[in-house]
Length: 463
Image (cartoon, rainbow, N blue to C red; front, side):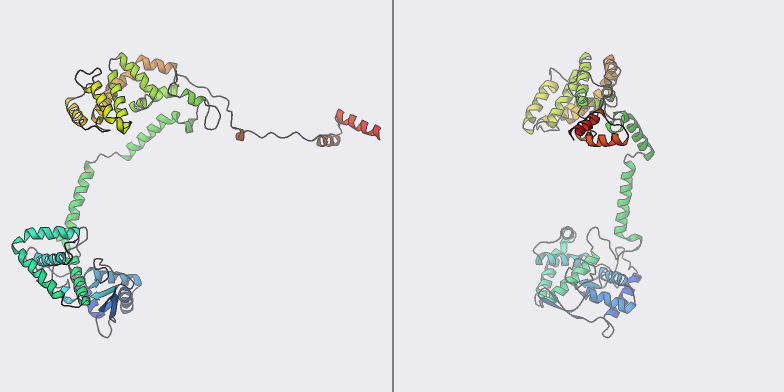
């Protein structure tokens, strides 16, 4: 493998100070006398020589440097992340586990302290070798890098494939344990020098770091999108909430109660009857609620009926009828959608329709194009256009009309009735006292009832 010690600008970059300190720790750990005791570790059925466990690493660091267990685990993690120790069981997970997971020391050839990331040619050979060995089953980001390198160094790709096959042929002559060790060594090296997307490149430092630059660009774009997003001040939001609460306070059955009586705790159903859909004369609170918003009026069946009566006098009832027909299409049965859409088109949208609605050309063109493949929401644009037309024009004029004012004046104001509670809510009636108790009480007070005196006289005559 050819190691490139220069950065992209052709200038050798200075060594990170932390790498020198890590090397000293690794040299101390490999000391034959005071270092760690290496032994064979079993990986499934393969015996790996000169390995140690994660627990052994943590215990040695605690004993050597007189530190806590948490500090030793942190130092061990740094040694693994910077490639001085690599795992054998999960080679893609560069972290230290304080258990029986086997680890090995990285050979000084792959140390990151004396050189910088390898060239694209070396990485291409590694990916080609891995692609041949695993028969094309690379990870997604490795596939992207493999294809990008194939296009970038296409003129030397034959050399890349030849080198990959030669290295694979040479590795087959080694023992299985040695092959596993070499594969884990190389994989740990490339995970550090070519980290996966979203993983911080630990070898970069200073303002030239690519990941930091990408993070800075992403942060700038995120803040730019945030500035363009519509926001409302908390004071304005709270003020709107207070206004909404004050507006609906008189219409809240929990806060103000129900008139004439509460049907949830009484056996009186007059409240349901007075607020039914087919009532002759609505209540005043119900009519007042229509003036809160246009949607409040449309959500009430009686309100839609009164609005339709007014629109018929204004010769614009087709707008509300079209809106209702679109609601039936949206919330109707799936098997009847095509038939309903065709019916709405013939009645409201077709040239010369009996109840033709006025829709702008752009919305009409989009709606007619969608009708060719009807679905539930094919009429949404046209329905929204008619909705805003009624909201801005017909709805304000209806609230100022004599029809609405007369209905508000004639509306019923229910009076509170006597509550008839359920049997389990009634007061328990006490039973009548015993006559003997009444007699004894009267005698104690010096007053005997006449019946009691007669009874006493009869008893004496019998004796």
